[in-house]
Length: 167
Image 1 (cartoon, one colour):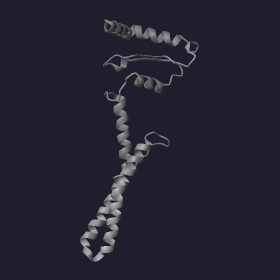
Image 2 (cartoon, rainbow, N blue to C red):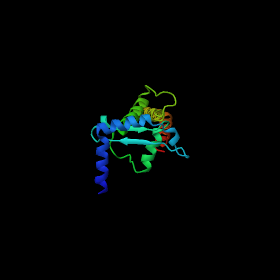
Image 3 (cartoon, rainbow, N blue to C red):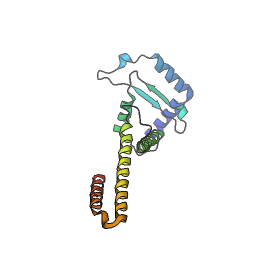
Image 4 (tube, one colour):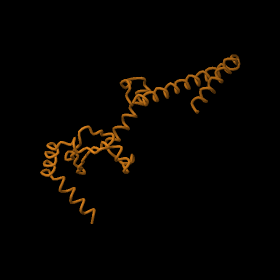
């Protein structure tokens, strides 16, 4: 019964005429004097599933949208659902990892993507070091026992690189 009630309310609020009235009314209402003693802010979101162009977001002045997302997360918003924001975020992280591995196009200074770019760069550096060490071992193995001292040095270096890569 309660679901039916809320579905009816949502359907009524999503109507263009009602949504337009809500927006017009919200724009005329000063919210500063309504603010609670603890600084609470107001946000109203009306979502029309499958029609994002009809979504309505009314927000109080000075509202921090990150706090809205945090409040939704505290109320059960999960990271497992599929939405464009999460897809874009993951694409950005993957891109930063790839660009870091290629040592190209670093993010702007103090950008949150810098840490992922650095991870990509570090992984590529480790890969290059492992490849160099393996190449040295293969080359020395082809020479045979004639260069046994260099072979042992290359082997020790390879062991150190492997230990560093697997810690």
